[in-house]
Length: 151
Image 1 (cartoon, rainbow, N blue to C red):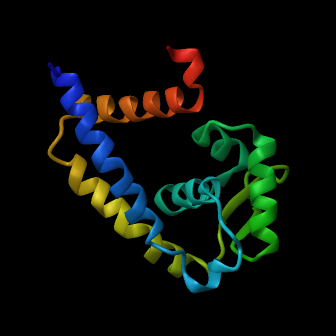
Image 2: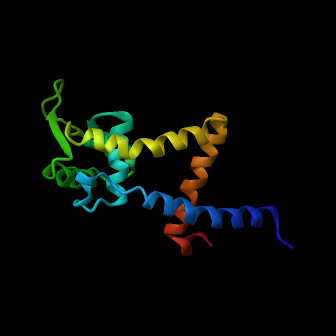
């Protein structure tokens, strides 16, 4: 006899591969294809598209990684001309990271359909339901990353 949870798991096991498959069919813009972008690059670029320019520390906090990790990503993408670093007008020791003017249109066009789809899917939910949805995905990611720790 299957439980309601089993039915939900079954449905998610069917939908998740389709979601991943659709995401993989959204190739990066032509000018970025040669860069072999990884998911961590996509997360960083998404933040910059959605929230605008920010410091390495701010990016690290939002991505949940060490500032040194973000510095490596930024350095890599800066050398390729995808990102630019500029001095913070209010504190010359800080660097502001942003998508380069030449890359912004292509990156925005690439990432916008996904953002619009999430917005449409989440719009009918209450704030608490959206938070539960995100928390559930984060918990799933955590369990998948370290399955033996969560038996």
